[in-house]
Image 1 (spheres, rainbow, N blue to C red):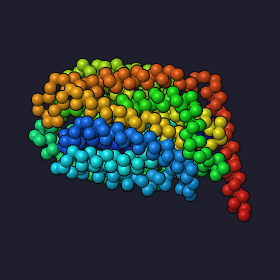
Image 2: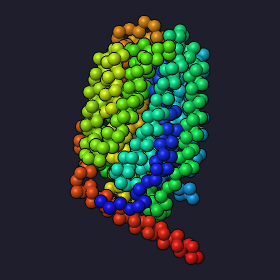
Image 3: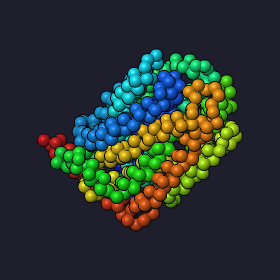
Image 4: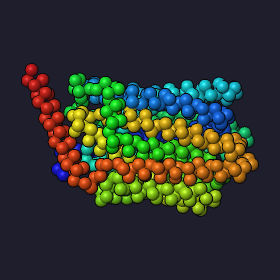
Length: 473
């Protein structure tokens, strides 16, 4: 398959994509991993109110994702259609991220609930804008499958570093033997402020460094109305099977992030004075990163669909073992297996990139925003489902908000939240992925890619002709 020169992405652009991924995910991972711990143990919000806040928040998620995605596709400025949103919204995301954790602790449960709910809605609005524009920006840099995989590799490394910092800093600095646990509030707030600043700075590298591809900007007459755009996306069979798969994967990501601190604190009894106890988390991080080159090699040989099937099957095995892991050695081995398999998720968005390529052949227009927005409409509620299930399981297993005397039932509940329950969701996801029709090993797939390249060459030629006419005038 011949490649156009502009489908080769420079190392600088890939690095800037990794910087942006770090900037976005260093705060996102702290949000996913420690918000549940912070609100339950420090703010001491009622467990059922915690679940209720996330269920209500799910409704706003259903509205804002396709709305912002559609708006991103329609935007036309001299800076592009994605970059302006990154420039403006990155600092606003960090500000709202900080506000979320300054909840009034000495107040009624309803005030705590209201603070959580409102801060969730405002924070998620800016997060949605940035995540959709950022992922859309990376997806349209190249249509070449291997180039996309490498772009996602840099983004995955940025995410992995952000994940490590967001988890290790609290584990190393908080005192999980403190009674009450709220004594850790000032340390948490300091970490939150530092990471919020880091996030805004690294997102700025991407916003002011990456250039968009102007030939992909749609003409005014090519833009669809929002309802028409969503309807056409939902009519795409490839997209439906992908979205079901991505919902299940998203649930697993959210569940692991949110429940890993409980597992480290309550099951493994990690404390800041026992660094060796952090080995299970470190093994998860190391094997997640070590898996990236393996995934790229498998992707080149087998394609992204089959690579995801094999890697996530390995993750399922690791998650089941986690359910029966109660000591550092077995936990380290099982989480290493989970991390190695889960590195395959760096290929998830390459599936959606192929779907967008297929759609462009049909419509003639690149609609990353519409697809990523509608995809988020379907998969982001997985966060609310994860929070709701976590709160319900902890409530039913008599979880103790203080670290002392955690009942056996609560220990089992935490293991299930980190192990067998995500494994079940992942099995359902793989069943959906099996029916995903775009297989990179087929002649039909390769022919589709060839046609998209021809279409992009034509668009680039038309852009050069328009620019030439303007110069002549």
